[in-house]
Image (cartoon, rainbow, N blue to C red; front, side, top):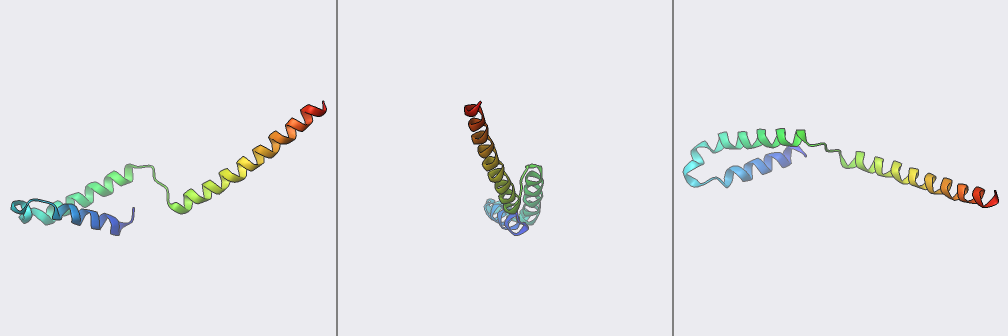
Length: 79
C-alpha cells in the first residue's frame, strides 16, 4: 500500500474522532499511521507487477502442461 494511501487513511481516521478528543488528534493520527503500516507489513502482499509476472508464468506453464498431456494421450493411443 502506498504511503500516500496510508497517510490519507490515517488522516480520515483521526478526523472521525469525536470532537472532545480533537486535542489528541495529532497523536492519534500518528498512532493510526503506525498501526496501519505495521499491520500492512505483516500481510503477504505483492505488487501488481509481481502478480502479473507470476500470472504470465502460470499461463505459460499451463499451456505447456496441456501440450504435454495431449502428446501423452497421442502416444498412449499409438501404443
